[in-house]
Length: 392
Image: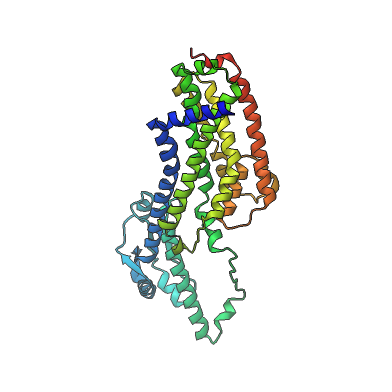
C-alpha cells in the first residue's frame, strides 16, 4: 500500500509540474465545454428574444390589395417593407428571410365572403427564419379568426358556432423539467471533461515514461507491478475527477449567472444534491475510463502514438447523446446497467428535477465498477509483460 501511494504521489507531483498536462486536464477539460455551451446558448437565446420583441420587417407584395390586413399587421408590430423582385430566388439565396404576397384577386374574394388567400414565402430549411415565419403566421391566423368572428356576428350568429371543438392546453412540465431541453447535452460535456482530465496523465504515466525510458527502472524496483499500476491509475483517476468537479462547478455558475433561463420560464438547480449524485454515479465511469485509457496507452510506444489512439476513444461519450437524440427512449431500469448510458440518463433526470431511484443508482454503480474491474484485470496482465518497459 505504501509503494502504491508513493507511485501515486510521484505521478501527481510530476504532472502538476507539467504545464501541458495541467492546462489540458484542469483548465481546458473543465472549462472548454461550459464556455462553449454558455457562449453559444446565450447568443442563441438573446437573438430569439430580440426577434420576438423588435418590429417585424416584412416585404409586402401587393399591399394595395388588402389595406385592412396591412393596417392590422402594422398595429401588431409589423413594419412593411417595399416589395422585392423575384422573391423566391432571393429567399433561396438567403438575401431575404421571408415575404408576404397578396394576390390581385384577394379583394374580390374578400367582398364575396370567400376565403381570401395570401402567400407566405419562406425557406423551411433556413433555421434562422423559423421564429420570424411563425410569428407572422400567427398574426395572419389571428386576423383570419377575428374577421371570421365579425362575419358571423354580422349574420346574427355566435362566433362559437364556427368553433365546435376547443383544445385547452394543460402543460404538465415544470420550470425545472423544461430546463432539460436546454441542458440536454450537459451529460455529454461532463463525461467528456472527465475523459479529457485523465487522458493526458494516462498517456504520460505509460507511453510517456516508456518513451523517456523511465518505465524500465521503475519496473526493476522490488515493487509489485499491480501496486505500480494502481498508483498510476489513482493519479489518473484523481485528475479526471478533479476535472469533472471543476466542470460541474463551471456549468453551475454559467447556468445561474450567464444564461437568461428565467426569461424562458426555466429553472436550474445545480445544488449540493445534484452535485453529489452526479459525482457519485460518475465515479465508476471515470474509473473505467482511466483504466481503459491506461490500457490503450500501454500499447503505444510514444506519447504522440498514444495521443492518436486515445483521441479516438474520446468519441465514446458521444454515443449515448447521439442515440437519445435520434431515438428518444423512455428510461428503463436495464438501461442504468449500461456504462455511459446509465450516467447520461441519471444526470438528465437530475437536471429535470425528477426523482432518481436508489436501485437505479445502485445498478449504475455496480455495472460500472464491474466493467472497470474487468478492464483492470486486462491492464494488470499487460503490466506483467516485460515488453511494456521496452521503448523500441
